[in-house]
Structure formats: structure tokens, C-alpha cells
Length: 289
Image (cartoon, rainbow, N blue to C red):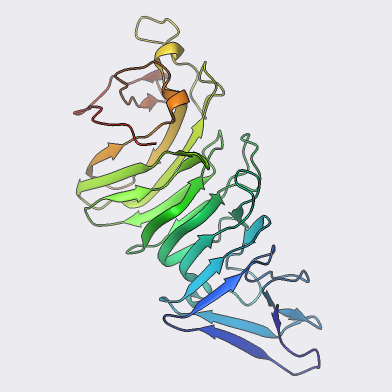
């Protein structure tokens, strides 16, 4: 833990400069605004005596062995862009599928790059799927790189989401994973236009495709018959505010695919409460796992 002196009128700060790396295994993360200890302990004698500044090209690495909170900004003295992560590296060493790193709330922002070195970045505080997710923001121009980690979304209401500001064309991979052995990346490839804040989430369903996401009431075919046997056991939330043309690549686990040999993506229409027919050019060249 890094802290200022206990005596009155003593103040300090820590700078992580360009190319620098701060590694924390603290369960309360980098900066806990309250009286609880964290890697940086700001609240001393009722005064915020400990400040910090992160260069856009600095790295904060979360390398805990227990479940860790990823702290954000907007609290205490952590209110400027320099308090946001440059590179956020998730290198979690806890028990797979049991312990993980997760955002404190929606205030976690990555300015330069999200790095998934090892372990689970869970966009929820637990593995219950009913709700309670967080939205992690990746700013414009920032990248996402993966070695052996993954992002777990997995809330039924789509609240466990990644928000990535994208204004260029290219290929943008979101390294979702259902668990430590099932990697299910989603690839977003805009070929024209400016996408804006792209919000992406996904979750696993039962074999009958329940529970449904918000507004979805069925998975019937066009004749009104239950079509769950021919529907993969996963939903995606995709919000793109810009006017773009894009290619989307979906991935599912082998169990979610089941015996479906030629899956097609369909869009739910919340006004008429029905599924649009498959649109665009769709094919199944391979399955990523």
C-alpha cells in the first residue's frame, strides 16, 4: 500500500510515467476512495492526502490471486483524465472460473489499451446472471490485446457491457469468453462510416433459450412454432449509434451450437415483437472456440 504520512499537512502523490508499470494484487484495486485500504490509500485523517497521475502510455497491472476490484474515477480526488488508465493490464492469477477482476462500477475508462494477459475480466461483481453488470469504456483510438485472458459478459439484461468508441474502419475484436475453457470472441469490422460508442454484451441461455433478454418474448419461427432447437444458446446486445456498414463475426461454444449445422444471425424487433429474417451475406467459414 502507498500512503502519505499520517501527520497533518503532509501530502504526496505517485506518478506512473510513460512506459512505467504499477502492479497491484490488492483486492480493493488501485484507488479506493473511502477509508478501506487499496494500493493507493488516499483518505488519511479525513483528508485526501494521497494523489496519483497516470500517463496515457503507463500501465496499471491487476495481478491478484483473489477477486479484485478495478477502481475507476469520479470519486474523491480521482476526477481528471490523468486518473484514468492508460494501459489496463489484467494479469489475474486467481483460481480459474472462481476468482476474477471486475470493475467497481461504470466509471472504469481505458485511454490507450486494454490488455488481457491472463485470467478473467468479469463485467459483473459475481457469476449470477440476473443483472448487476458494469460497462467498461474503451476510448477512441485505444486497442484491445489478448494473450490468454478473456472478458466475461454474461448478464441477462446486457448490463455487463463493453463500450468502445470507434470512428474508423478496421477490425475490432472483443475477446469474450464464457469461462476459462470457452473463448468466444466477437469481431466488429466497420467498412464505412463512423460507429461512435459501440456497446457490446452477450450471455449464455438454457437449451430453450430462456431467460430471454429485455423485450424478447419468444424464439418462434415464422410459422409460430417453437424454434429453440434450431437456435444457438446465446444472445448478443449490439448497439451502434452511427450510420455504418459492417461485418460481424459471432462465436459460440460447442455446447451452445449443439447440432445446428448452418446458423444465421437474426435481429429482434421490439415493436412488432418478432425476429427479422436473416439479412446481408451470411456464411459459416469456421467456428472460433
